[in-house]
Length: 256
Length: 256
DNA sequence: CCAAAAGTGTTGTTTTTACACCCATGA
DNA sequence: TCATGGGTGTAAAAACAACACTTTTGG
Image 1 (spheres, rainbow over the protein chains, first blue to last red):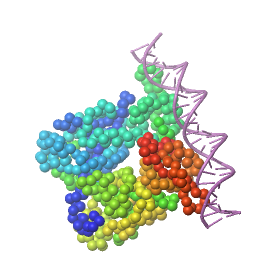
Image 2: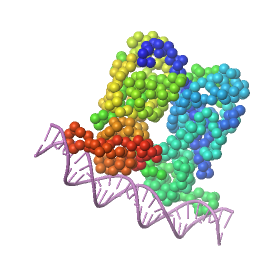
Image 3: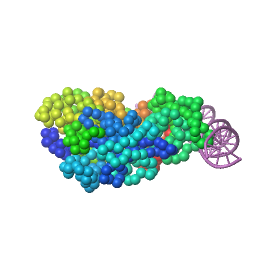
Image 4: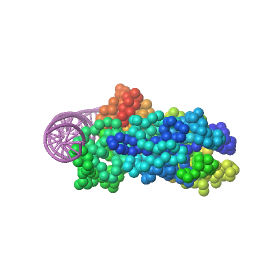
């Protein structure tokens, strides 16, 4: 570029520089003490995939990610955060994808569109498990929740994207409204603690956890107990969203 | 997309979905107690710009960013970190850019290439100030260091990109080898402290700072003093890179 | 009645903060 | 010699880590 004129450079820019953009979403949920992730199984493909899509000219990446999740998984109203761009030159799997598409009746030249180079922006999404009715789109066989540690292998570099999302989630636990978005409106402290333990991958001391959470002043105590469960009935809480967001501005203090 | 066949979708994907990728680099340096940023002044444009470029088909974004910095600013061997993707639909300034290009002799149709929609990946770079000999490329008039708080207005959304980079740098101070990449090999503790203060935008207590930095065990004491300065000669240190990197894995502990 | 989970406080240890004096150097 | 910045320690306060018994409930 140094010794070349701008005109010359513009001649070849479209051919040398073009890359397409895609996005992939790691949708986290929490149920029964387990951190879950929403994965698609594509027709004629054994491995699972993250829900992903493309950006239209008229929308931002964030808007595209929201639209993608609505269209491909039936999920609405998600908390979304971009976390990394994946731009390895050989991300795609030209050996498999066009074949699969041809099998479901796409012409070879159309199928080859998918084998182009895509640079993908990774998003993680936090959704309340019980609000989701997974609904696969026409490209996918199934759309289901998987335990993080019981998923099968994923296509392309989706394993890496998922791992990166999890690390990001761990590191942002004190800076994003993680509890608010993953738990139902009313929840118990042991549930909140199990969520933290699931994300961090380690056990926490019950009393220290409660003291610390209370010290943030982000919980509203509800004078209700969870009924119908075995053993002693735990109290219910909900987040005080105003205070939660104010507390997050400076980051919740201290380590886990 | 829900009610459309894959074939139909592929028909219109290139026209509705295409977006180009660019990248912009916020190059930080540190000199005379000030955090600096490297900015370009373009021909026929009063405002300043971040050095930016495009990705070739054969390289990752990180490789493209390294190449861009070498070509446009003469900077080699930088520490780079992607931090955010900027995908506002109206990032570009179609009113100004094509005009400017026409003024420097580019034909209108070529000039319009720059007015397309670009989604830009932001990188921040950390370089040792004294290693940089800014060298503007053929698109730029000047390439110089500016104090963070004394820069003029920037083109496009580059002000926002710069702000975001600074916030990211602040939040990653305990997780990236910031001191190692911004300071010369040998440095004094007061210099390191001024770097932290410049990044965080606040004063730190001298004794507490030293105790904490020492507690990380990442410094190697050099049995040398800085000579030729007024006042008492401070000791020189350098980073023990092995220990620094090991300490960064878990994040340096504690707040500033 | 018993097994299993939930509620609750205290203590010792570590970390953080705040703060003041002497020393070396170049001007 | 003096003005300026660099080196150094201590004490009080806050945060953290470790730990055990009692209560409630469904089975």
